[in-house]
Length: 69
Image (cartoon, rainbow, N blue to C red; front, side):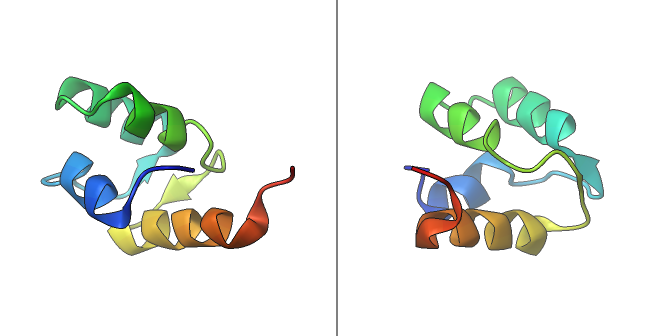
C-alpha cells in the first residue's frame, strides 16, 4: 500500500458506513480518487467496514508488514 492515511480520509470524505470493500472502491472512483488509491483499496480484505477507522486500521496493518512479499 502506497497511499497515505490523509489520502484515504480524503477519498472517503462524506461516505456513509457500513460499506463493503466493493462499495468503498466504487465510492472512491465516483468521487475522483486517483488510480493509486483505488488500487490500494482493492488490496483491502473483502468484508464490511463499519467506519473509517476500520479502513484505517486495515491500511495500518498492511503498512506494518501485514501483506506477504
